[in-house]
Image 1 (spheres, rainbow, N blue to C red):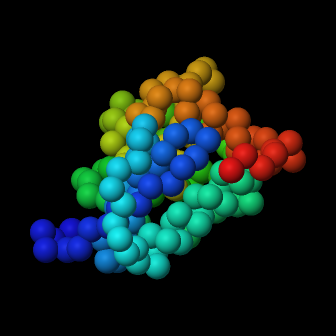
Image 2: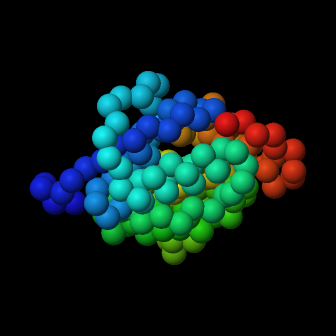
Length: 166
């Protein structure tokens, strides 16, 4: 993103706290958890409004699919990991070992985990769907309670037990 690029900020209330959505004139650049909403941009471009709509639909159980223009800075390796994250099916999980296999280097398990942790577009790039090989919930920038909530939410939607929450 160029320094003179216009930046936009919006806040979305959710069952797991506020989500701060950031973007520029072309893309969503971040979706991060925050405790309190801050100052929202007076005008928001269509793709930021669509991000808000899709996140609200996700929390209401209407969808698990996101179709948004995304752009977050990162190394080629991080980009490869993040691209693989969006391929994890809604309501499913994979291990960090499986993630490293999917990017073509079983020895890169630790590096894949670090790249997963650097993801700055929560929920949409579903880093919460990566768990320990033993099935344990490990590390999540938003807090393990949020990771657990998101995984349970997705499983309940798939199994038809979800009530409207938002």
